[in-house]
Length: 358
Image 1: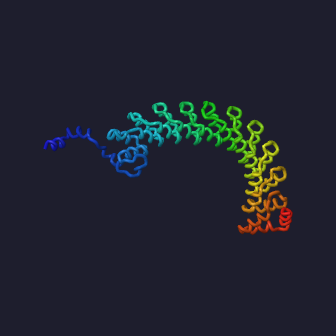
Image 2: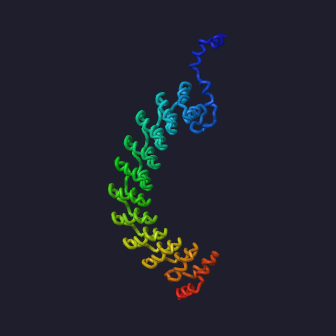
Image 3: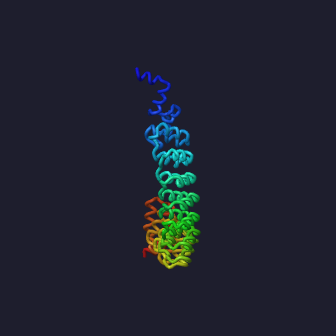
């Protein structure tokens, strides 16, 4: 009876209800909605808050705080920052909510500079190296510049190498200007392997880390002759036989010519073997004409197996040592390579085979 009297009082009931759990009636749809369920929060109550954040509804977020303040922990501002919703971040900040380093990290990753600036100025949680790492990885020049100018977390050596590999000279210059930690000889190695002459030249002129033989080796492997020439003329690290071997394997005749004329490392039998396997006749001709390393029995067999009739014909006509024509013919027959069988069975090839057997 007493409870009925109290609950019927228009004066007492509002005072009692404001201390009870629950939400405003117009906010109920956010708790019943399924669209964002499971997107961030797993429980129904918090998913309502996160849905309001994701939908960029700062006024709803503020009203939810009045109803269910216990739902507001660091993941609310982290989520708002990841969406780039600065107005929601402001509301959460004004409500006294906290965040974690994930807030600035996520905003930096997505390129939301205004959010990063706000968090840097008004918050103390900061960020991790992930922020600058992702800004560098995604080529966000303005974001990287801001973080380098205002933050001290820095970046990883891998991030700097990534910038060099992709030839992002301006980013690399920024890192150099701000004395970023993480430069190493691998930085020039990656720049050379990516074929970025301007980056290689910048590092040569402004940095002291140098490079390794991998720089010229990788540039040669990928056919970047200008980079190979620069490293030969300006650096002393040199290369190994891998340079000409891999250049030949990939058909980069201009690089093979340069290394033959300007370097002393030479090559191995892999150079002609792999050129034969991949069908680069011009490289095979050059190596046979100007080099002494020769090839192995694999040269002819691989050329046959991969269907390079022109290479097979050349090897046989030139009577290249270690080329076993009978074995190659057996291989062609076993695999049903009729065109190759005809090539290997031609009169000229037969003469070569007979002389090789005698």
